[in-house]
Amino acid sequence: MEFVNKVALVTGGGTGIGRATCLLLARRGAIVAVNYSRSQTDADETVRLIHNEGGRAIAIQADVSRDKEVRDMVDHIVRQFGTVDLLVNNASITRHIPLDDLEAATEEVWDELYSVNVKGMFNCARAVAPWMKKNKQGAIVNVGSIAGLTGVGSSLPYAVSKAAVHGLTKSLARALAPEIRVCSIAPGAVATRWWAGREEQMKRLSPNLPLQRIATPDDIAKFICSVLEQEAITGQIITVDSGQTL
Image (cartoon, rainbow, N blue to C red; front, side, top):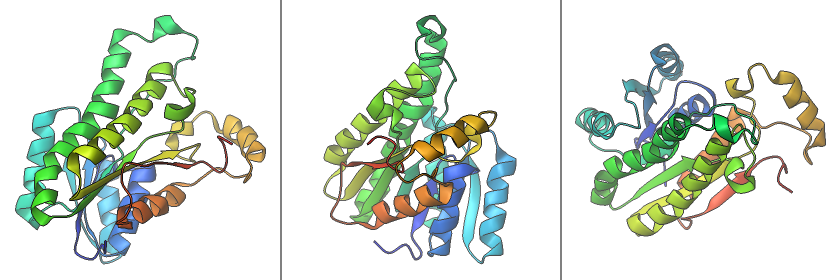
């Protein structure tokens, strides 16, 4: 799929992987809707960067865990640009809890992480699906994590939520075929603000990876765009982790 004049919605597009993906899509000709929940300043900065390079973009607020907000967001995008062709489900949250501290994995933590990380991705996919089906083509990439493959991550609920994202991807790929392709990428460690305060841990990890480098947001963005382009792939969970899970 060519990206020129295609309308792309990127959730959590204000920083990190989301921002890098927005910028790359815009550079390749897409019109980008930069979603944010609370960080309007970051989303506006992403839009400014795109405009400075001659691209087209808007910032648009919605809490992806709330179905009505998601539907209103998609309606706004469609009114302004006519449709939605591409969706990058990137918005996620976590809580940093030792894996063996089961008592700290409270009902509140489970509900919060599942609402954004899993239900939020479903809400967005459901909202854009009619427009993609109307166009008889569309592509969705859900940003999972190797935590969902290994069971190890910033917290037990986070790892389980990312495993659910991978399962959601396979179910959506079946439900939305043949018009809409749905894949998930599972990044390993990525140099984003999620590592804030744990930079030394990241430095210790890097030399022990087969490729001896931590992925950058640009690395992941390039791969997201590659997956969006490929018209003969759906339902796949693709790991991008510098060999971390070998």
